[in-house]
Length: 286
Image 1 (tube, rainbow, N blue to C red):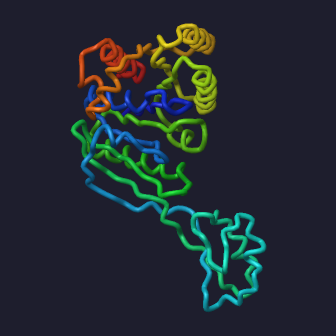
Image 2: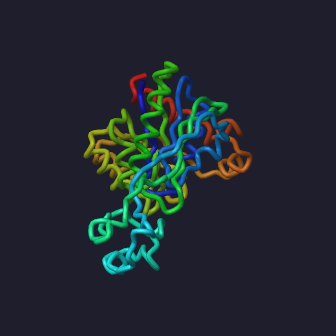
């Protein structure tokens, strides 16, 4: 199977809309939403959950009231101010374990933390693996790796040809976790100064891990001077421009109707996304 991950460097460039359209266009694929901090692909695909699993990650301190002598040492040493009145605030606790180490009464233990859930679901376009972190939870890189692993197992079990991953924004741990080992990265950018800046950063991550990349300029006609700057930069880096998608209200209209734009209307945007998917499959060697 071949895996393509759609990244953006920043949020709001339209990568989830493009992944939703890929879901409608591609055959023999499994979908993975790797943006576990703010998962929203399911809003567009409206999946029917088949499996729900807990995701345990990290630790949180717990104070045994019967053993606690209320010496106050744990409250003094906690730099996160997570302990008050000899109780631990699980949201503020970073799981560093310092209080556990210094407690003279051994009244503090470190317990595994329920950080979120991950799901295997069915959509009208095929299987979807996605997840949701709990409020104020971290360790999303591990959860992204778990989502990708389950997507791969699902593709192997069903004999599917593609894994299409909706990646997280930025260049941090979740992006690295969603990118490493993929066959291709499709980078969706927009012709703004922040879009150009973050495209350069995420391309650097792709180069570091040796992942081939293509660039899609979304809403390219909003600022054609910046679009030409992106094209010039990509040419200098040896990166191909896979598509230039024009701005059109039809994309928003499709989202309001809960449909990928390629299913909502035959339009210039639809044609560009269809061509983009063909370019991606050729880059994957299909």
